[in-house]
Image (tube, rainbow, N blue to C red):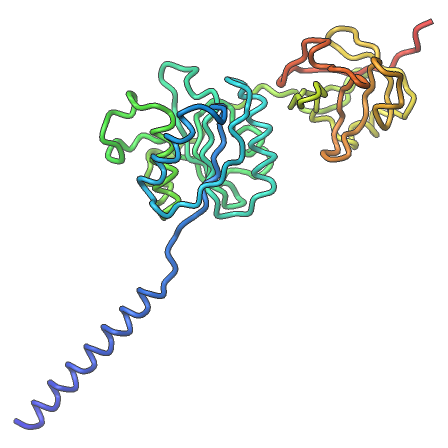
Length: 299
């Protein structure tokens, strides 16, 4: 009898010890709380910015919210795609991007959750906004947000900020991307002219217009070298039959004159006017396809 009592006592003590150990491990186990990077065309003064933050915090009260930019030009998916990519390049993995740009352009807009090979997670409308991110970082997984159980109203009736904010908040707190909805293999991609040399032309696409009207393209130094451009060369830009000089800096030409050179920060071709606004002068927009041709100076 005494042996039985001792055995029961030992078992009880072991049970208590194991419970305490498990509890200690649970207390010290790190909780998932990924930073949430906000990116939109709302503008800083729009109520939607604070609404988006509130929706995220309602799902994850401890969320670390980072404002990347709310200054994407309204409805400008092409510019937004480039700006989102430039931001994502500098952020580490294990970050959630909630990107809301031109999210109301379709009657039945689809929303996606992308995980890249860099292990960054993007919540975005399916409108081409993820084009450059996918092209550079690859696709690890891609899901459509269609799990109605995550929302208290029909998804089709919800605003973009409510859909994306809810999902962004959930994922930042550890919710699995695969539980937001169905896996997909297709998504909308922007119609981009890849940089190449063809038929004595250097082809590419305008990716971004900066505050000074400079037009940043996707044509790299490698394509320029392949094409054989050198400082001082005369070139013609299409469309528009725009005459310009190829140089190294704005001041290689007189004020008010067109100059093309490599943007040293991005290592790509930039179309500019010295002390002028190239985009405004020639009505150039992000997403426009261009070509450069060597030409002779005007007589």
